[in-house]
Length: 167
Image (cartoon, rainbow, N blue to C red):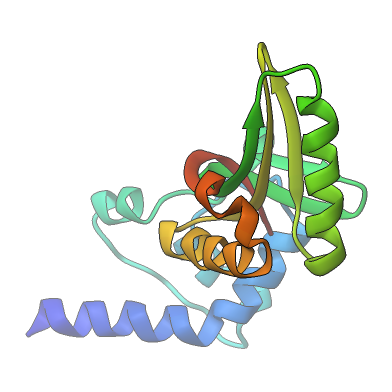
């Protein structure tokens, strides 16, 4: 019973302070404290919270992302994690570069919100689309792309790659 109460307490505390925690992560990306440390900070509540726990629990929760894991582009911040993209084109012919950029333009016309990546890794030009944490999200995009561009259908597939996830 005591173990259940402890888990319920941590879950409730996490759910009630999630928005404050998210704001703190965004405002201080260099912090390397855990959520348990954040609970004990006076700025998150009117009272004082003391978390007594086994150190192994703190290790299981993990550490906030900071330092070289966080990338910045202008005002945007993101992390690089293993994820998935839809590969729309790959080619190693003379005109492959032009074809990759042509398809990128066509996709951007219909799906302007998508992030596209045209890359060259000798001898291949590739066009990959999206930044997804799960295969299911990337597969959903694949279905939409095949619907919008049926002639590309047989070339589109999901690839595992390091992706950019916004903070």
